[in-house]
Length: 369
Image (cartoon, rainbow, N blue to C red; front, side, top):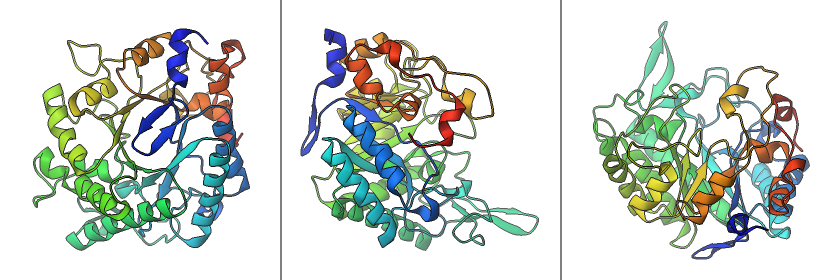
């Protein structure tokens, strides 16, 4: 290994969490769990990445135990004996290879549509109600609804701890439920959960606090957030570093241990006047470890592949990434599509076999490898 590459394969420690490398598998929805239950193919999918040098696996989004949490077919649940038994098999397989794993806890919020499994009659739940043609298509959450969802997050975290997961990640990004509360475009509330960004953060803070109370002080909590949204890739929650600090500090104080800073391109500066990306600013402002992510290892960003296309993303050098990691701009590096298509990505990078890394195309989404 060259000196710059070595940094990616140094161990990382935070309290009781010890990772063998700085490589993280980013959460990627795969929809290969019929009935919401991870099966043997899912077990093998995650095991292979741990065996090939991924230090921390963040699972695909797993839905919490609330009637409106799911928005898509065949995504895995994180509630119910059958699903938790499936995840226990995943945990055991990853641990046997020396890796660590956390579930991404997910509630899709108002993205859910009528007709979605498991109960087609349940509409999306969100900060604000939406009625179309006389029918409620988004249920505006009451205080009781908020308490119920917060309790579901806490239970999922408690279950994660019970089956041997190494922590949890809260999905607070990309226009799903928690992010819908953050974003003034979807949060039109006039109570204590609406108005200022501080108020719009209250729901996330209550989720974090409930999870911390459920799992104790030493179980790692990762929080994933983004400026951009599925509905608006140019959206920004905050436009200055000062405002970012004001947004993040209450989340850190509530119990977040690591921030997962979702960007489309890891190399882009977050604010004018500095080369720091979102993970770099977050680390500097909070003092917490951060995970960077965004088109790592590929020359084409993921948006190109959201629609049917023949485009292929070729492997790209990671010298700029390694330079930033060596400067301690961030602590961990999440790899998405490059790991989805090539389970041996990390070991190939470690051994300098860049020419052997597989390119990514939409065909890779059709199966688990």
